[in-house]
Length: 116
Image (cartoon, rainbow, N blue to C red):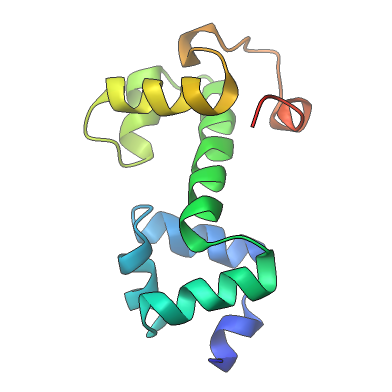
C-alpha cells in the first residue's frame, strides 16, 4: 500500500476530497494511485469504501455550512452539486429532513445520531 496514503490524517483526507470536488477518481488521481488502491486503503483504514466515506463527509460538511448561515443554494454550489435540487434530495435522504428546515441552532455534533 502506498506509504503516502497511510500517513494522511482524517482532516487531510477531507481537504483532498474537497480539492477533488468530491470525486473518487479525482481523489485517486490527486493521491497518485488507482481508484482500486484507494478503495482498498479506505476499507482497511476507515472500514468503509471511498464513495461511502466521501458521501458521509460531504453531508457533514453540508451541516456545517448550513449551520454557519449558508443558503441551500450556496451550500449546494460549495459541495460541487450542479443543481440545488440534487443536493436537497441527497441531504433529505441522508439526514431525513430538508436542508431548508435545518434549525440554525443545531451543530454538527448534535447531528451525530441523526438517521443514517
